[in-house]
Figure 1 (cartoon, rainbow, N blue to C red):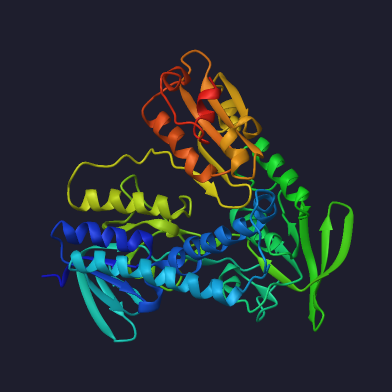
Figure 2: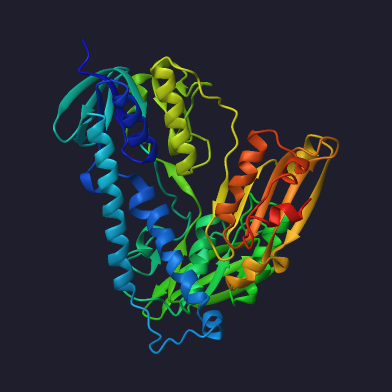
Length: 452
């Protein structure tokens, strides 16, 4: 006889979602999280939510000049980072109340402890030196900051995204190592608040997973704002002093030595699996990522599942939510959610970036015939009203059927607009179907009709 039907390791988006779904369906669930303060995971406590709250504030500040031209008179132009931190903490706590409410409604037991495997049905709660058992176990332990091979985090001088939310002042200059989504978001934030910002990206373009058009446009827009971009760049040496951080940066044959007040390391994340004693349950892994089958079950144990950042799937909260639903459906022996799904990729820098479906590169590699259409926001009234008409919508579609195959957006509210193309792809709609629809005017969404 087991103590629980299901044990869930981790209370981030993947963990609390699967625990909630299973509990509401009548399963006796225990969710294990290291501390009450960390419920909600990286996304809520030191990732998606606080970052976007910071970025929303920065976006407002960046548009100040435009709204002054519209008649707004700011008599006191100041920014207080401690006030922003307080409002962000209030936001986190408000959302955390909702998570606890979901778990309470699901009648889930919460254990604040560190979980390790004893065998395929038994978990040890390390601090309590207590064993608990379950028929099924779901690993949703999340991920952590990936260390730079050379630079080590140091107080408030060399920081990760986690420490950004604890800064007591805005640096005069900052080097951001990594030009992916997180690096570009914080580049926008610090640039809006007056810091001299430079990005050092090891790859040949910013946001390497995005369409080349998007990457080129983002680089151009960043440079217009005064952000310096170093591509194919690698930090080979550094030293910390009272004056800041001095770094040697190599880019091809070019070698430069520069000094910054702060350095932000943003080169990805690693799965939190090393301390789970996975070998005790014969769980296979690859560089920390847990190996699973098409139902997200561990290869050697079909009663153990893995979801979220411990998998090789994209480390996105919305992907984790979907994986939680897939596992819940499978455990409950209900309709299986498909594993072959599309999801939006979104970056909340300024300008925003979003994409869905197949990219140009993927379509060319597969030999699929397609065409593309592009609509620039400069022709859109609402974009001008919002004070930023940069960027475009780009749609890839089948040459014969006009079915939408993929889309990329850079510009105002791209992270919201992308979902109309998500629906179009899932519903097998073509550009000719969009032509029959009526969008409100003036809106950003109506730009989709101008693509026809």
